[in-house]
Length: 287
Image 1 (tube, rainbow, N blue to C red):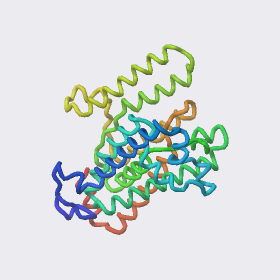
Image 2: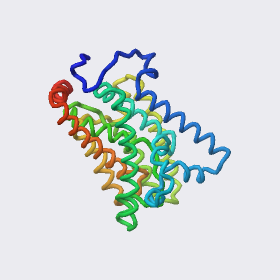
Image 3: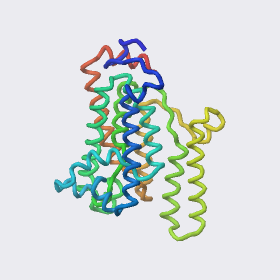
Image 4: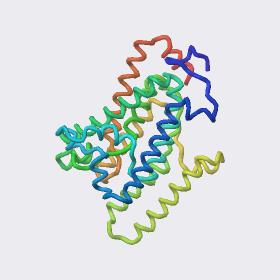
């Protein structure tokens, strides 16, 4: 890719040099490493105590406590599937954006987006999540939040402004499976068949993971990819889950996603104003 297409410097990278030169790959490695360390530590120490120390709790943040969790929570995840799908999203979105804006700008923005997403989650949950309806939309102030998705939505928000017409595929199948699992567990908490269906859905999620790397068009259809423009992705990824969350409790931090998205959109318009010619060239190139 010619240098003129990019806001930041872009270096040529081979597959074997990704971990040396790609910030995205380094972030993925750090997320995986932190997840492994946390899981090992949980074998020797009380998991709830560890979670209170490193996961983000909105009520503690607004009271000025455990402020370091705004950072630590970005690199920890609630389970292997949570980690996997976040890292898949980070790989595809991050590698693309890093090549456009450069690794230094990318790293700074990633961290800022993740921290702001945590702050937005903490503030919205603490001030609006104290009622039943508010907790469904913004989250309960005493329920922890964890994961890289707030920062990833920042990347998505930035790309939705810089490359709004570029096509991207939303991996809808596993997302539907997670929502269906939560719905069944909520609607039929004590029914034996729910455990069977949950096991089937878990198997489907595992199968989806293998399908992503199969390079087989038929198998890839199993993950139900939905092609759309980048500008439309944040809407599809947030609004339906907020609506579903009004009726079924979902293990998804929509307010953190929205917070990261806002930072990305704002920074995208800033770059468009500061680098009008380059950003126009990028929009024409990736469409």
